[in-house]
Image (cartoon, rainbow, N blue to C red; front, side, top):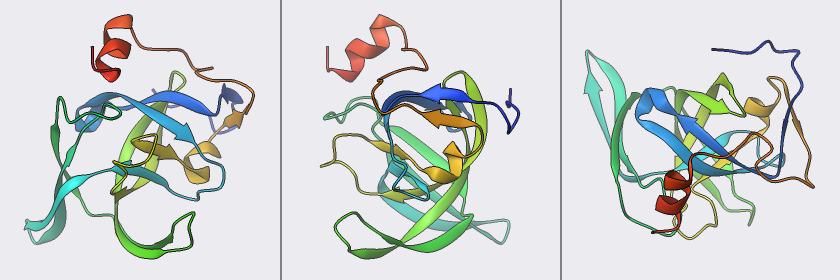
Length: 158
């Protein structure tokens, strides 16, 4: 279910997001208005061809500070981009398109694949996704709601 682009859905500085189309119903994400493109922690990134088109296979560990419940994902490669990190380092990253569920709405999003295991969040949601009708309130957390307690406990390793 996609919301209208003129919606004003409030989100906080951190939210629970999902990408059910690639098998990730829950991942804790930092809302980052300083980042243009969204980014997802990916390991074992392997490019391959399917029907003559470039694809990528990668592993996602959805829980913070944990290797539990790995999910292998395969997606068409949408693009390759040079991305400058917050420390100023430039890398070339693969970009995939996913349907991103955030605060009860689903929007298309371009997501770069990166190594984020040392970062506090396995996902960043950037401006390109947010400009599809989201308003960020930096004083709030989880304005879009939280998953069931069982999911939150899995994220904490319990």
